[in-house]
Image 1 (cartoon, rainbow, N blue to C red):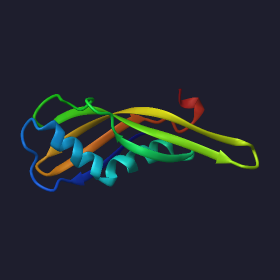
Image 2: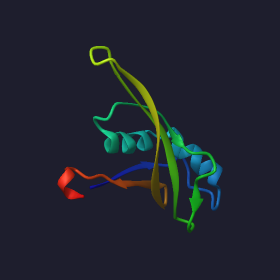
Image 3: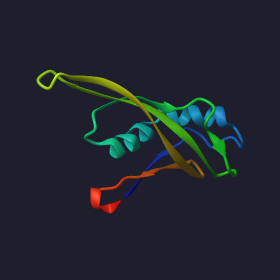
Image 4: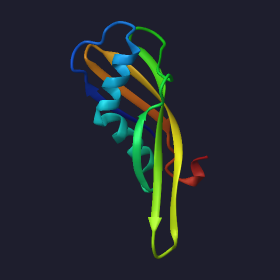
Length: 113
């Protein structure tokens, strides 16, 4: 299953302006929602953002980037307390002022491998 999320830009995207687009994606709840859906049940999600310098435009309306994030799991009863850093490749497309983010495939069951 591949998750997608979309959001509307504050204004039309300036052509070739990756820093502006990175800021728009990072400030939108869509990126965190996309990663949360992928990592659901694996721990507390925190610090979701685009890895600096990873956003690449493949055309005026499409590109990709790496999202970096941390998963934290804590259980006093099971003596578990760890935080792990993860990354996910996210593709995006822009249609006028709407950005669609597409995450990695997530297997629903172990027999889907």
